Amino acid sequence: MKGKPYISLIILLFTVLLSCEKPEEIIFEGPYHARFTQTSSEILENYKDPFNINFNEPISIELHLAAPSQNNTTIIEYKVGGTAVENQDYILEDGDKKRVLIPVGEHIGNIRYLPINNREQTGDKTLKFTITSVNNGLDAGFGETGVNGRFHTVTIKDDDCLVDLRKFEGIWEFNQNNGEFIYDVEIQVDWASNNTIYMLGYTGLDSGVYAFANLDLCRGEFVIPEQGLAGNFEQLGGTRTDGKGTFDSEVEFMNFSYSYDFAGPSIREVIARKKIE
Image (cartoon, rainbow, N blue to C red; front, side, top):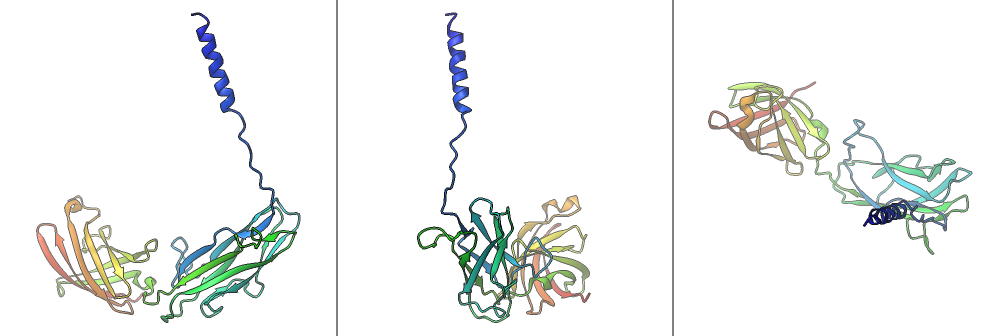
């Protein structure tokens, strides 16, 4: 019986040694090539980067080297096809060069483009990028025909029924129940959703009180879903509201009604006017 603890210890040590063995490394041995990281992407014509205040921030399409570090700058040349027309449907950064430079020791490069909002309903457009050549002895794409990773297709979605969301942002004057209450409301856009606005000071009680509305930008309508109000007042915790309304094409006026259940349910009519800054 005295030998059993030692046997168990040996088995445990053997198991630990096995678990610590270095995993087998899988090394890519070629053929070395340059390729697009993704084969396709999609973007709205009326594009805005929700994390950047610059409305004209270009969109990047990534390419990478499936190869060891190169001793010379890698030059990837490409061509552009598809139904989209350059300088009419999109702008290509350094478009006259049609090439991407990847510095020595690096593996990532980008093509950068910007969709043009032409405010015309012309349908979706496509951009097809094709790698035509790569220096340093690297292949364009992978496989016998280079089809894998050699192409990237962008679909530019026509959203010209969309109103410019930036127009909603700012201070609005809310005229409630034909002059019963007149107060200012700040509207902010939720750029992550591209169709939601937040109305701060929504009831006129406090700027910390807000409600959100979901926009139908093609119809010029919006809905305030049933929701509990958030704010600085504890008594608002159980208050609920919902409603619906319309806005004009220039986003200067809104008309809507909403129910407000605080000391009792009531219907409130609002005419809102965008203040000139």
